Length: 87
Length: 87
Image (cartoon, rainbow over all chains, first blue to last red):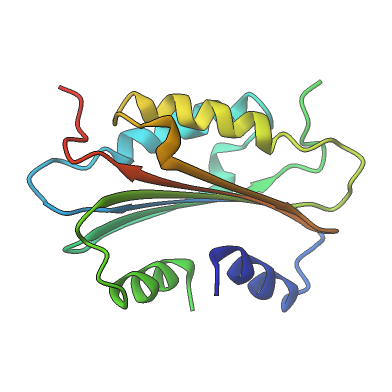
């Protein structure tokens, strides 16, 4: 199963199409833990880029960051306002 | 199952820890298709941001973009060089 399949199957099961949503995932598969993670800093810059395209309320963002031995994952879930396109 | 679980389970099954990888997924769940997608343009800017943190070969990036009625998904898979941290 590809990740695209995962998105498709998980979304259609819930009646959640009354709001627009943007979901961003970053997974860093690492071979060593010697270097500090750059994902928290990357997260800020990703949000800055996305704000060029859509307006985002700060409280409409939920962030999840996890680390284990071999992988770090950053998950951003953003609920978009109804009028989401900046002109 | 959360998306973070998906990342965990899918990676541990393959002996793929000899290379560092960065995977980025953007899913835009839409209520209307009247607006053009901004994901292809967003993709370029995301890569520019990521290049601030790691060096990326252009041919080490694979991109997948899919659209259906209610959702667009952008998937970037990047194999990182062994020395991936810019000083």
